Image (tube, rainbow, N blue to C red):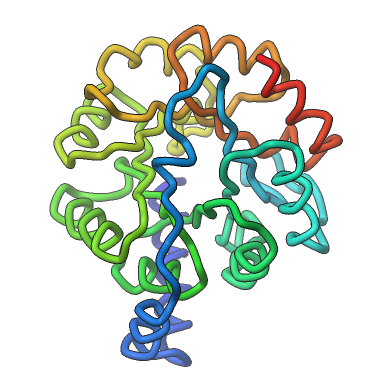
Length: 256
């Protein structure tokens, strides 16, 4: 499934490149104001921090929410106390787009993450051109050479890579990059099975000084408390916010 999602995302980027050449996207990326400092926004604090996600659907859960106005939802997240906003830009399975990211960027003062299946420099440049401050890199989807190339490009553009892992080996690969923002996704993107205890088992492998992000399986304050007790600095939450009251749920999560 992960290989298919990545291949489709790359194919869609190739199609976009036919209409918007690399040189044009690169110029737009370089013309953007400096990216916001996501590491500062997400640095460890006395309370857990939340990356709130704009997510219409997923392969595992199907349709979640229409989200006709992603900017309004993003403003609700900001009002509710989120530290950053994740925008799913994959269109085929998640119903997102770069237009969503652009409208969110214009609506809020928080760092914005492009969450997609990034595997080419063109996609990274698109992210900056659309106003992203962070870009997701999924270790399982990339070989070491490509992972390093994309990581370095993200950093050179002033953005922050969120390096997502699913195993001890992948976490070690993230550490070898010098990643300062590392996520552990409880959802195995090959099988889509959930393992909420995976983060806790890998917590000791995070490099010194890295910000630790727990992703997926966050539906209640008890889930946030579980991750916090396991050492998470940040939780990334999507489904619970788009299917319920975002401000009330954020308040409950942050109270942990």
